[in-house]
Length: 498
Image (cartoon, rainbow, N blue to C red):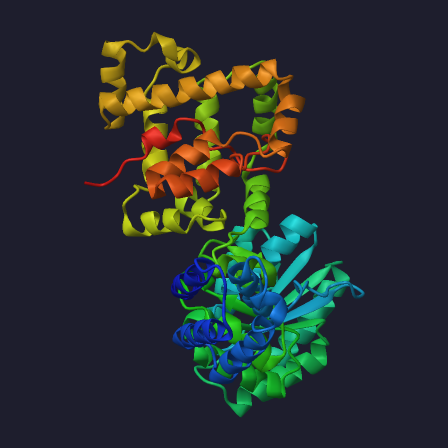
């Protein structure tokens, strides 16, 4: 997301950073380019103009121009202004009222309300242990109520039984009564939409809100519609007491104009972002993290959270015990690779790590094969249980068998074995340093990032490799909330397309 805007702003700030001193003219020229970049990203004109005026006023202050690092200071000012424009704080769902707390989703037809209703319900059930009831008030779109019932089955969330011919206000009243009687914590109301905003739709939303008295009225808009999404939000906010916005299809939005304009135009916070089609592909909207991604600063906090969610507790405990003994076989390596795949693969990881713009570009251009992790897994599964436990058994004949069985080459198998050997050596060193406690102390000091550094060299050259190496591999012990370390020697497995 925000790829085109991020690239444009990155070029502007790279030029600023390359200069030892800045004049007021330099800053104003850069800010004009920022304004053009925002407009090209489909940000509303008044929003872009106000943003640039505020940022310019702060950036031409004497404290910035006389700073030792004026370019970095300007980047920080733009970052802070982006956070302010997106909303200074992460907006939480207000469901602390007397149960059931009613969450009402509104929006145009096709914006993704029904799927988003199920995503939110699943999130509330799984992460906050809430008992949720979903009800569809959409009697206009064919099979809309059946669709929500199907999603309820998939997410294991209760849905209100369908009664043919019942009108939205009556359904809302019945849902509220049912939620109270059955002891539900949250009631999700999926309302009807239209192809465009009309007064009949608004009147229906007002009538439902009057009956249900919702704690939250969330507008669901498709971020890919850009400026149209902002106009829809403005129309809704004028007639319905919205409490927040949910942007869907954010993962496909390279420009980001809807997200950047929404808060300033409507005054309503963006609370969630839909980032995929799966029912768990929704995440809270964190303005500071989004601003960091736009400016190429990465999103380490989200990366660590994603890792913590992906790591299975039993696997983590088993791995921790083996690490304490300095043990690391092919089964352990396969477990680490599986964790990386659960987190979205190489491309998703690159997008969250600071200084990884070159790596992202390599992924996007196809210079690095995203199927690398799958090929490595195929090689390991082609080994016998004894070979996985003791890779030294793999002689030339066995290597050929593994290569044939996995659709790879003997050279690929050799690279995998070399990577495992380097990682196994690292584990033995960790044991000598005092096991897990020693490793944690080392990581706390930004300890070795050999795997990441080597991967960076392979993907983006020495500069990127050095930056990634200094990060210490970003690992954290399995089960300790950190991401799995990219193993030493991983760079040798990266295949460049010819």
